[in-house]
Length: 531
Image (tube, rainbow, N blue to C red):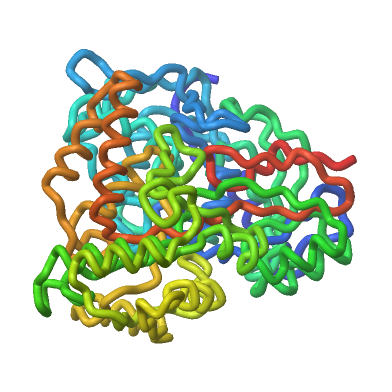
């Protein structure tokens, strides 16, 4: 289809009626199609908002991107783009495919692309993905199908991955305001979707129904299953109980160690892959023992961090405590990312990934550190993003082996932890990172930019210089080498102590197949198949 853009008013009226009907009764779980359950919160449909993990799960199904990750892998491929490349000056030029449409009939062209990115940065919703777009200097429309991104670092090799992240969702200019978030009702009634699925109805707090979009022209292809229902759960136990009872076909999102063991006992099919989210112990270089607020002895402070690293048993945390819901983390990025390296495995403990209390004692004695060293770790019990209380109680026991440390766990609310970090009153705390992009720099930058994410008072000009080099390096071999140097510098300084990596986990019943975890870091509905 060619020609001008239109509003599609009759479709909007039909959609409003469908919305009201959905709110009144809601879809039946006995209907045809696959029923998925999730305990991930869906807080908003607007991709510029803080959607929560559940919102991003929904957005992956209904909004297109210029680029996406190839199904089943990490390779970036065009989604609704026909081509995407750096020009000679280092700008990123994207040309759209022909005849693109939203589900409501509006034409999808370069104006929508420019609008999508400009509104993200204009709204800058708290907790939203707008910070990922900080590297864009300007975005302009060359013609109806061509968009030019001028970058603050021309030739930034990490930028294509941003286009495939939640920050890169393309929305309908006719529906989404330029300076405020669209409401869920506005979005659902206008049907401004151009992903593999169209969101048909939303029963707030309970059910969302999806229908495959026959006009989708992106890289993910036509969905195998045309109808999907997503049921929202407030707790993981209820989700696990329903999939075990075959009340739903598949459970994804929010399943933890307690549910994992139970589902294995119920002989359900469990699919588990690295999930991208990391959990680690964060040190405040000012407040920690021998930190700059106290005796300001960097040598002894580093010895304390090193000895703690020698005592951690990550395999025990992953296998015994987390029941396979996590895997050991020996580096500073997700294991499945290009350039990931288990640098900590050989540098600490027994040199094979295990703990070594004798080595920890040697490090402390060599630095003249009196033992036991007292350290308070501030934790938020059962924070799904950064760890569980069980993990940190096990870690406390590990760190006290040999009597070298006296570890106290201070259990607080998220608000109290945030206040303590701002005031600089927290020596070490439970931390984590769930990146929204697949480029390795999205993992490493938070450790290195002082107070941008960790509030750790750590900075290292050498490491920052190393981090800047890979950004514009187009040679993959040289880029990988520079990224390894960054990780080695982080391992030497230990601003954080990596512990475990979250695993994406799905439990299937009713013979559902086609669960694929890939570089999208979420579940794509389109590959799911009923027997």
